[in-house]
Image (cartoon, rainbow, N blue to C red):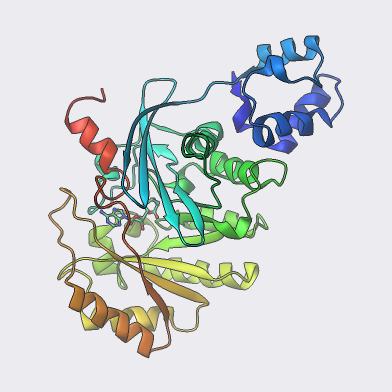
Amino acid sequence: MKNIYGMTLEKLEQYFESINEKKYRALQIYEWLYQKRVRDIKLFSNIKDDLKNTLIKDFSFDRPEIVKIEKDEETAKYLFKLQDGKYIESVLMHHNYGNSVCVSSQVGCNMGCLFCASGKLKKERNLTASEMVSQIMMIEEDMKVRISHVVIMGIGEPFDNYDNVLDFIKIINNDKGMAIGARHITVSTCGIIPKIEAFMKENLQVNLAISLHGADNETRGKLMPINKVYDIDSLIDVLKKYVSITNRRLTFEYILLDNVNDSKEDALKLVKLLKGINCYVNLIPYNETNSGGFKRSSKDKILAFFDILKKNNIQVTIRREFGSKVTAACGQLRANYTSKGVIE
Ligand code: SAH
């Protein structure tokens, strides 16, 4: 059975037409779900009883369950239990410009990046659009805040779950849905080229971030198995096309790992690779996990790397750290839970 929170407005309109109902019913439902935030369909006062019964028969209104919250001053990390007993996590971050949520897109991940805690647990399944929408709605309701920004950078590879991620974006972006501006939504991918090609044709104003982490095939290939399928040159080629078609600025994420990808030469290679591309680089201080034995680069090395990029006119920022007090980076809460044997 389909979950109501996973229906784009367009799909809901098609559904109503298919049962010989007026299309505008979809907007009425959206208002109850996303503006009034009423969960009990019996209270949908402008919907007739027989239509309510049809909706109850055709859709599930279920949501995941919050099983654990870890908070500090600027972060709240949520562990959710899904309908089938699987666990995922999301992180709320308070910024001076608003509140953002880092959303998971899969249960586990198959990309196998060596430094990443999420990748240790293989993909069990894709998340449905409704499970992604619920992460945001439930955090908003639990914390009584409005979420202004969404990053799809939690557990999973969003472009390995393309259709559901796209529906999710359409639902949260719809101004009758959660009305989160497209420019406040960021999808992060490890670089699945065919999906980047598809994404550039969707005509969305969403931000795209690429996890790069290495400026040559040797370095990147050792960290990210996906590089053996889609190498750096092909990736950069498609990204140039992406920028010219969408006119959007790209983000490159680059985790600095001690003695792996953080030398001056690495920085200069990165400069050469990105020269002329409308982009900025987000340098990420590594959150040490027990995956792969990687170490975080020293502050000095991070700053030296930053300076080289800056001097060479590459726009660059160093990611402010969030959540390191609360089991740190995405994937770790769930991974710790699993290693304690809590998740089957
Ligand atoms: N699969 C997607 C999105 C999930 S990962 C992707 O690869 O982009 C989101 C970001 O967090 C990626 O840039 C990833 O490389 C980074 N990341 C993973 N583990 C990390 C860690 N331990 N410390 C810092 N960043 C990490």
